[in-house]
Image (cartoon, rainbow, N blue to C red):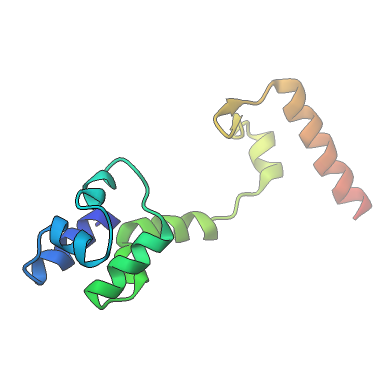
Length: 113
């Protein structure tokens, strides 16, 4: 479940609409609805968690698991470069000559470190 799904679930368990929950948390009446397309601030999530009497971690569900999975995933960059797996950085293609430069830097560190 996403953060928004969990907020909806916890709110329903208390018999509240999202508008009611937002008002109790001191947020704009329709602010939670906008979180479907906009990431809520940490401060807003803290307010929601406090009103719902849950921990802020309880609001993250699959979003937290996905983040933890990415954090714990390790990539052997040397292997990835040699196998051509690294093709982009921050959504931008890495030109072959720059991939080669990255490879040489890594290789140099292996031999000097």
